[in-house]
Length: 185
Image 1 (cartoon, rainbow, N blue to C red):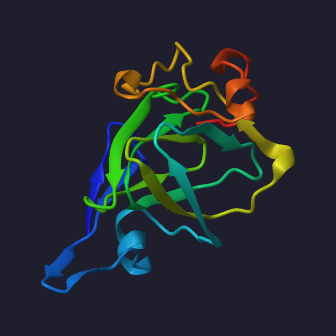
Image 2: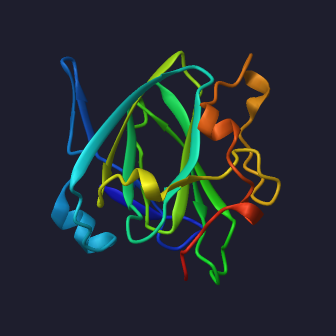
């Protein structure tokens, strides 16, 4: 696997080695020893999976401490624009983001550490998205920030979509300046 640092320390793009032949392909999607060597030890406790159609935008989501989550995300089928936003107060990269295309074809993964909001936009007709987390889901600590927050200004490239599909929670999410946040750098 290749571990590529991004412009925000702690956020990593991981590119597995894919072995293809006439039968298909094989790859190691996760190997604890390599992850520990490049990123550090994270105790992932659960794998999640979602299926979404073109134009679905999920995010920007996070959980407040002590239920914040680190995530290792990837796409099995389809293509998404995946985004991680630094919410750590005092961080030199506060409110900055990393965006990467994740697809079933490129097999890239994104590691999102605790203290970040996360979201993705489906660019293909359908996307199967899977991710590991290191903490339980706690609804009372779940929070969101608007996907179109002008302070963050994510370049979602929505011009190519007929319409965007948001949950009610995401439509009504607060802007960053009004969002509850207990992350410290």
